[in-house]
Image (cartoon, rainbow, N blue to C red):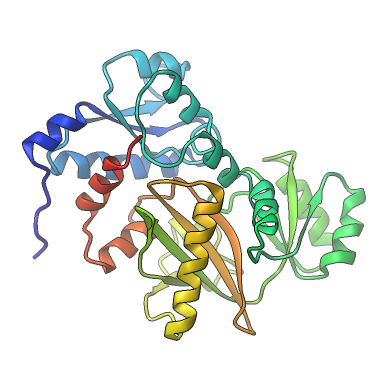
Length: 317
C-alpha cells in the first residue's frame, strides 16, 4: 500500500496559493489539460492550497495576463506544453509579474522548445546529436537527400509531442512530409534516421532518474504511441550494461545543463547499432498524464506522484 505524502502546515503556508497553469492555445492543449488535472489533484492531496488556471480557456477571456492577475498567486506550477507555454513566453510574463514558477527559465525554455537551436547548441558543446539540415524551402530537399540519405526524420522545429513529424524513405514521402511539417512551423529540420533503441532520462533536481527504454510497433514514438496506444512498452530492464547506463545518464544531465534547464525535465536519446548515443531533445515541461514518462521513472525510484509534484514545486524560482 502506498504511503500518503503530505506537506507540513508550515510548508503549505510557505507555498501560499499555488496556480497550476495548464491548457494554452498550442497544438498540445489537450495533453496539457490532462497533465494539469493530474498535477492539481496531486498537489491538493498533498495538502497544498492549489487551484487551476486554464489559460485561454476560462470565461472566454483570451488575455492570459488578465487571467494571471484575476486572483492572488504566490507560486505557479507550469504544466503548459508547446508554444506559448514551454518556449519562454509565459515564463517571461510570470517574471514580469514577479510570480515564482516551476521549471526552466526564459532562455532555457526557448532553447529547449527550438529543436534547431538546441541541436546547434549540442554541436557547439561537443555533444552527440544526429546529423541534420534545415529545410527552408523545396530547394533544400535536394540538399537533405545528398547530405542525409534515406530514411530521415522530418520535424517542425517548434512543436512537441511528435506533432507534424514524419519518417520518410523516398522523395515522394519527403515532399509530403515537408508540406505537412510546414503546416505547423515555418522552421523545419531534416534529421538523419538513427536505427536503434530509444531511451528517455528524466532529470529531477539535477539528478537522473531511472532510464526507460521505449519500444513501439509504430515506425517511431509518435503522438499516438505517447498518449493513446496501449501497445507501447516502457522498459526499465533496458539492456544496457552498467558503464553504458552511466554514460547515458551523464550525457542526459550534461545536455540538461548545457541548455540551462533547472528543476526538472526529460532528455530523449537514441542509440545506434554500434552503441553510440545521440541526443534528440531536451523537454523542459514534460507530460504528466497516465502515459507520461517522468512519473514512471520517479515511481521506479520510490517517488510517488504527490511527492514528485511537491518536489517540483519546491524548485520554483
